[in-house]
Amino acid sequence: GQSSLFKDFDLRHPKTSSWETVDAYVQANPEIEALMQHGPFVMKANLSHEGEGVFLVKDAPSFHAALHRLTLKERADAKGFVVQEFIPCGGNVLRSVIMGKNVISYWKRPVHYGQEITTISKGALVDKIWQPALLKMGDDCAQVLSKKTGINLAAVDFLVPSAGKETFPLFLEINYYFGRKGLGGMENYYRLLFRSIQEWLMDLHLNPDAVRLV
Picture 1 (cartoon, one colour):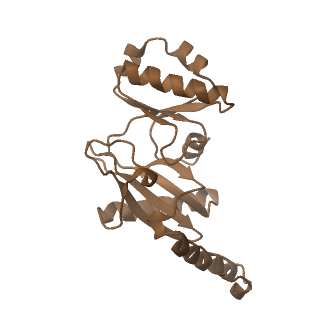
Picture 2 (picture 1 turned 180 degrees about the horizontal axis):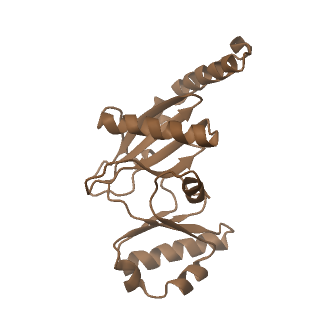
């Protein structure tokens, strides 16, 4: 799904492969040792978001634990998952929220050293000032996505590699349902959304006062 979208629109993203079932994946990759030669990787259940259904595979035990969890999801009629290149980023996730023509970017930063999967729902820190140049790059990348696809309300997560010379946001996932804490809470989210809707109506030469915030 999303990995195909990133590829089709030439948007930088971690190397990703999609699988329909656990059995199909295991048959294609019978030797865990061969997989681990390339370092850690991530397995993500279909339709997962905000860190749920995301498994970091570092060794054989974590690999088999991930397969077990994915198998349970299959039995609950939640088939499909992706296997993704692990991007060392210190657990820092750059989020850019698209609201109409506007983009608001901030960092989701880990609470504990060594934390690799970071979500606000599990206590991540919201940081709106760290690495301002990368925050601006997140704004720009989200605008490119919006212009290419027409997406006008979503939270886009990026990973920025912490190793190597290149520091450029990689598209991780698009969340159409997302938390509002990083935007200042529910009330502020609706104020921002209201402003974006009014701007959208004005662009269509319609009356922006036709909508009200109640």
